[in-house]
Image (cartoon, rainbow, N blue to C red; front, side, top):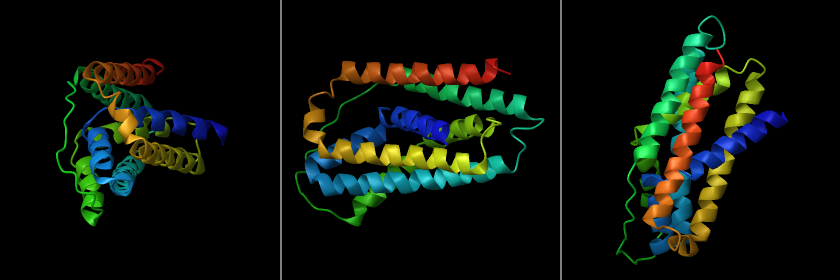
Length: 201
């Protein structure tokens, strides 16, 4: 029970520090539209992640990922995470400013978070990679898998709300050189996880 929770927190924190379109959208919205608008964006992202996880999980459940195809699963999942890690490592970061100072909260912010996350091709790639990691853990029951993904989602959503709350202070940290190194570190971690999946089989 404890291991899925700790692993879920680890993957959740890894995802939440990833610098990408959703990261900037969340901070910019909270900074210029207010905390409640940032929460709406975070909620949209959460709904999108749930949808992608369910789709990827249904797809993965059709295959015997932990059985005779485990070695192929490990290679495919490992390569997905390595690819995602390389893309993250190489991504150039641009800090953009938003000029709209209106503090309006509307369903458009929820839709904004949902669409921004759903239309990012890296998101399903990430979740497919994570699901292959979970599915190849022979000691995980279906309950453990559910605990893992619930923990990941709670961790990401909680930190997104926290980022919205302290968006003004975070703005001072959004220097390109800092964000580039954050992405490089996250990229290296993902590459290492992918390599470990491949080499342990």
